[in-house]
Image 1 (cartoon, one colour):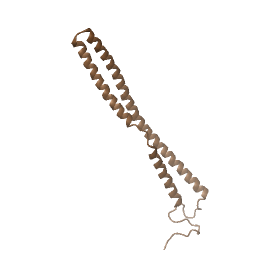
Image 2 (tube, rainbow, N blue to C red):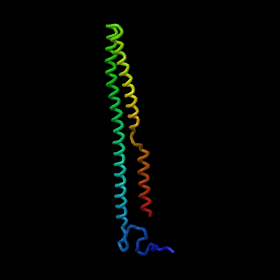
Image 3 (cartoon, one colour):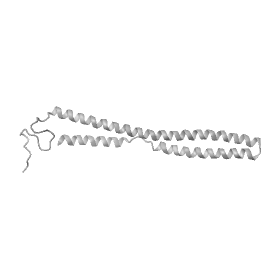
Image 4 (cartoon, one colour):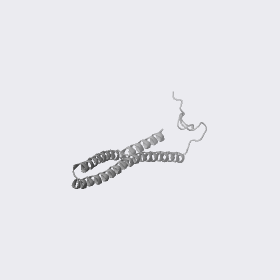
Amino acid sequence: MSTQAPHGSGRPPEGSSTPPGAPRPTMGELVARVSDQFSRILRGELELIQVKLADKAKHVGLGAAFLAVAGLLGLYALGVLIAAAILGLAVALPAWLSALIVGVVLLLIAGIAALIGKKKLESGEAPSAEETKANLKADVDAVKKGIKS
């Protein structure tokens, strides 16, 4: 036999959050509670999105820094290659050959830095809208389930 009070007895059912002897909350109070809980959940989701965006922004910033380094080294390499062409025309083999070797090495470093920067930028994607929608739907379902019980 059940120990719960029938619904018209004035006593809250077992397991409810209302203490014995206290009046049951009105429909307006329940709606206010749900509204308050929903706004807290929504604020929590927004804070989570902010944290994720900040993390992604760090990755994008690092990728942009590597691309800036690649651009700067590419500019230096261009200067060295131009100097190598000038030295190659002006003097015999030794001077321009050394300048050409330095230019090629700088181009290789710039290429590696560009690849690293591109990889970092690709990993800095925005949080998916589907993930956020799924979280909000789960929160709304939980609130609905709490109202029904």
